[in-house]
Amino acid sequence: MPVLNKKLGKIFSDMSHIYQYKNGKEKFRALAYEKVSKVIGDLQDDITVYAKNKQLEEIPGVGESIADKINEYIRTGKISKYESLKKTVPVDLLELMNITGFGPQSLKRIHQQLRINDKEELIKALQDGRISKLKGFGTKKVGNMLRSLKLHKTVEERMLLWNAIQAGNKVLEEFKKMKEVQQAELAGSLRRKKETVGDIDILVASDEKSRKKIITKFVSLPIIKEVLAKGDTKASVIIEEYNKQVDVRIISPDEWGSALLYFTGSKEHNVHLRTIARDKGYKISEYGLFNAKTGERIAGSTEEEIYKKLGFEWIPPEMREEKGELELAAEKKIPSLIELKDIRGDMQMHSTWSDGSMDIEELARYVIKHYPYEYIVLTDHSKSVRVAGGMDEKQFLEQIKAIRQVNKKLGKDFIKTGVEVDIMADGSLDLKDELLEQLDWVCASIHSGFTHDNTERIIAACRNKFVNCIGHPTGRIIGQREGYPVNWEKVFTIARQTGTALEINCQTDRMDLNDELARMAREKGVKLVISTDSHQPGNFAFMPLGVFVARRAWCTKKDILNTGTWDQLKKFAEHKRKK
Ligand code: DGT
Ligand code: CA
Ligand code: CA
Ligand code: ZN
Image 1 (cartoon, helix red, strand yellow):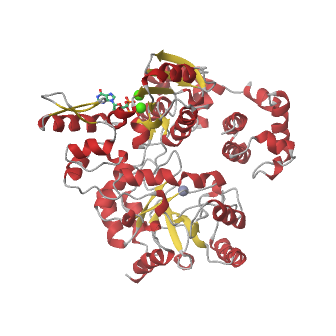
Image 2 (tube, helix red, strand yellow):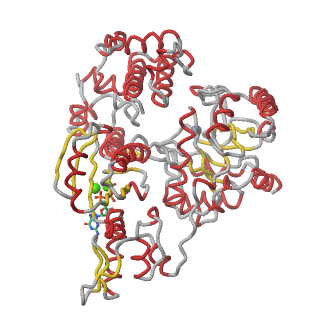
């Protein structure tokens, strides 16, 4: 992502927070800045290109006033409005605003009554009891705040998978460019596609005499901020992007398989494998597989041959979590996991009719140009999600007509009519059945009441015969909000009985369902869909994230409905309606 876009995105996001903090009435201005921040952060091209071509106002959400601010920033490196706004609020505290329990009202009270200006002081005050003495801050609330803070810390210390993939690939590219490098690959949790990544591990193969040179070249790259450790065959550095650690190891090509296996992990998988090797009279290390008695080297250049010599099929990295995969591989029963190319369509997205940045035609043409999909389902919000411009029945009827018109222009029935209908507090839906009945696909989601047990709400939605899918079922936001309590056993049973699918939402901080729940759902026979929930063009690229979750849940094509044709999806929906 272009650096300038990222910096501007951060400023506009700060401004949104400042407006939220200053005044509840500025909610719409705050939302506008929030949206622009996301859109700009998401642009492929450098913002200066738009500015030069006088195309800033063609960016969704950018009006004259914001365009002026962007130009000012490009010219002077500053936005004066932002600079003056910053002086009126405790900016350091505002970074916490997205975390549950740290809303603008709470932060304001803490700041005003305790004169707290920075994060560290606030954490101290939470721990030493000063905050629980304030009106409106009982021990329960303070307990919750401490819990969410811990959640927040995991992401500050770790990286979202999406960010780790971008950063990791950037570093990997640098190695691949070096002519001394024979092979280079991501390893560790990043290769296993865990939802958060602690540090980025990279494995490089080269002949022995080039290694020092590779390391020297690597540590002097401009993307590197700090060198933590450096030897002849390894280096640990902090990269500029996300300020995160990258561990690099260089080995010989004939050790490639054993080293990749070792550094991919997980540690638990490795430990189990090592025990099995020992029981069979072998010794395994990052240098190869050896006969324990004679020391003879038996395998090492590929992962396949090592697994094979030990009596296993090759195991996809996403499965190497010591969850029974070795037992399965011993029986040669590793499932053929779903792949990105199996996906035939995207099941959730938003247009300008609610809170998306593209109108229907623009969106459809964008997807057709960039993705090989056979269909997309437009799922704008229903009316109770007011901040997201939710629509009522009448507006949905208009939208159905608009979709038909765009499809006509496209010359194919590409856009399916749908909705992300809100599940209300009592489990009823935000739109009448008469409307839902007219849509091709109904996704029902919860957007309120995040602290209650929501089992009954979700079950009630499953029991509506027009609901085909539950959107982002747990409601968690990684690092910001835990999922609400739900009895998943019960939900999965009802979902299967009623023929309701569950979503794997690919938004980078949602990944909802996560790998564990998706696996439980699959084992219970629940069908899943993978959708990007796109609000901006760049979001469509998140699809692989959902596929990774599904792979970590051991899903094959048949577990994921949108690997099927639209006719098959239609049958799934019709089947429920006839029940
Ligand atoms: P992370 O970075 O916390 O997201 O998780 P990983 O899995 O990337 O862990 P990391 O970076 O500490 O180590 C990378 C891999 O190296 C790990 O997945 C397996 C291997 N490894 C590291 N330490 C050990 C160890 O003590 N024993 C064994 N068998 N393998 C290890
Ligand atoms: Ca790692
Ligand atoms: Ca590491
Ligand atoms: Zn939603």
